[in-house]
Amino acid sequence: MPPPAAAICEELQDMTKTVDHWIGGKPAGSTSGTYGPVTDPATGAVTTRVAFASVDEVDAAVAAAKEAYATWGQSSLAQRTSILFRFRALLDAHRDEIAELITAEHGKVHSDALGEVARGLEIVDLACGINVQLKGELSTQVASRVDVASIRQPLGVVAGITPFNFPAMVPMWMFPMAIACGNTFVLKPSEKDPSASVKLAELLAEAGLPDGVFNVVHGDKVAVDRLLEHPDVKAVSFVGSTPIARYIHTTAAANGKRVQALGGAKNHMLVLPDADLDAAADAAVSAAYGSAGERCMAISAVVAVGAIGDELVEKIRERAEKIKIGPGDDPASEMGPLITKAHRDKVASYVTGAAAQGSEVVLDGTGFTVEGYEDGHWIGISLLDKVPPASDAYRDEIFGPVLCVLRAETYDDGVALINNSPFGNGTAIFTRDGGAARRFQMEIEAGMVGVNVPIPVPVGYHSFGGWKDSLFGDHHIYGNDGTHFYTRGKVVTTRWPDPADAPTGVDLGFPRNH
Ligand code: NAD
Image (cartoon, rainbow, N blue to C red; front, top):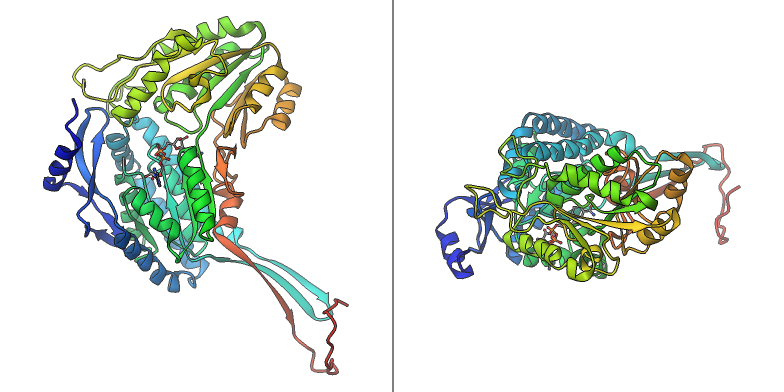
């Protein structure tokens, strides 16, 4: 039984191990005295406490960022990129340490945590080349001795609010681009696994980033709401669940801020009858159960087209049954626990309720535990077949190791099913037919498409983002969209008269180019 909330609070007051905010280039202890618990999902034990920011503490971080912007916004591209190159080297050298922090608080296995650091590093690579991306445009002689330059300038203080499932990568989708563009940054990471973000702050400081350019405030809705309304925050990047993404988008926009809010997902994999079924089953199992299904790009629905359904489900079952589940720091583990007990119970409820709603339960992972870790947030592998589109298991984002298989008679039926989903993050097609794959690319309503690739997370120099309820706002994240989001355009029209020119005289007509 977990201790009651009041007992946890008292326990937290006495706890000495604390994750502090990071403000103005150094750790900032809590001034409000409010903390939340950080739990090791493999043991269920509260291992540390994290400071929860009050309005005043958020204001202090924004003030530090605003002060730093006065000089950082004017810094040279060479200065910014030399710091980012040093940060990249430090990040590379500390991959293991960051991955260990992630595993201890998130629960994912070490190799998976290393993968997340690697994908975050790709965005740092991109930011190191910001000088190329910020090259402006110049048109000479648009009229007599008139030149026009388009340039992009930073916004000022910008904020990032990030989810628990990628505590290092998702912040790195944001801040390297933001600070490379000359902004200063306030990050509000997930309160469930806050340590990786503080480690990133330490490495940025070691790389020579001036104090106040990157700040971290921990906490919950109090901290987020203050960032959304603070007049000195010019833009908000958010990644998390759809209901909160919608709220962030509406609130930040109402407060006059630029906002991009990436939400939840239900990612489909359409398997055509001509596909290599072994490859499709390998891909489905890897993409559905990796990180215990707690990925926004996890495949959570396989749509089997035509007569291949039974064979495909059997191939998935054979592979899924062999997955080794255990603590993330055990090299033998392929899948770790879920983030909290409450989330584990919610995921389990979809499996226990599935048969009554018409699904065939092929594998039931509820009730699973790991010997010696009985209080961990464990759940095993679940596989549901012939899932009705109207059932909860299909309609909701479960965010756990539960794969739904649906059946479609034709390609068109499968595409219609996928396009009917309110989500549109990633989707994949498995086929040997190039014509069908091309049709799928054009017809499918999702922001990221894989052709025989189950998790089509774009590389750093292409942008990441979904459609429909998976993204609110008009910018995808990182890539060219990242540069665009974190800068605003300015167009400068210049005329230097030649000394030999006759005076033009007064002309009240609207300027014409000639
Ligand atoms: P979440 O929406 O619960 O939390 C995200 C952030 O919002 C956290 O920092 C949290 O503290 C804050 N928050 C939570 N409730 C809030 C409220 N009422 N008001 C203001 N702020 C609030 O998401 P999560 O559970 O941490 O992460 C999992 C979700 O994120 C999944 O839905 C997943 O699909 C999604 N996700 C999406 C992407 C993407 O790129 N589209 C990437 C990763 C995760």
